[in-house]
Amino acid sequence: MEYPVYPEIHVDFGILSSLFDYLTFGALLYFLHASETQFRTGWFMESVISASLIVLVIRSRRPLLKSRPGKYLLLATLLVVALTLILPFTPLGSVFGFSPLPGAFILVIGAIVIVYILAAEIAKKVFYKVVRMP
Image (cartoon, rainbow, N blue to C red; front, side, top):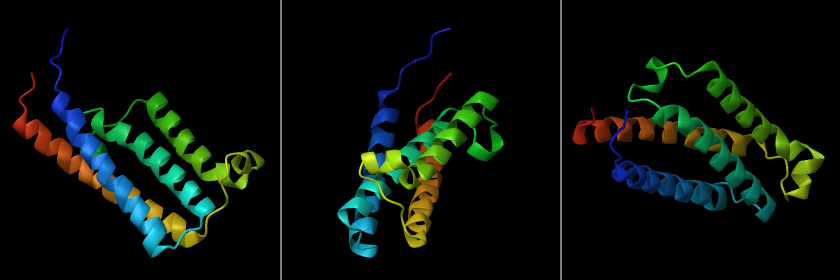
């Protein structure tokens, strides 16, 4: 079965992703006053975790909480999130220039990821109302 391709969804979610990149930059630099290492670590954590979780949002037309992902996709996503959170505390993390972040950083990054997921759900809903797919 062939499905139509809608490049608009890539543009829509690309713009949304860029907005949250800028929000993360601003929060790290101006709100948390991150050092260079903290900035690198925080941006890495936010971008990897949000990208992993957004896959769960855009994989289905249904809302995330009403559409259960396959067990292997969910397991892989949770593993990526866990490894991303643990990496700065390991010797390998220091190879990449990461350092453990203070709790406030983790809370702010977590809040940004949650708002990003909610915004992606809204964008997905709007997209499917505008674009009629079979």
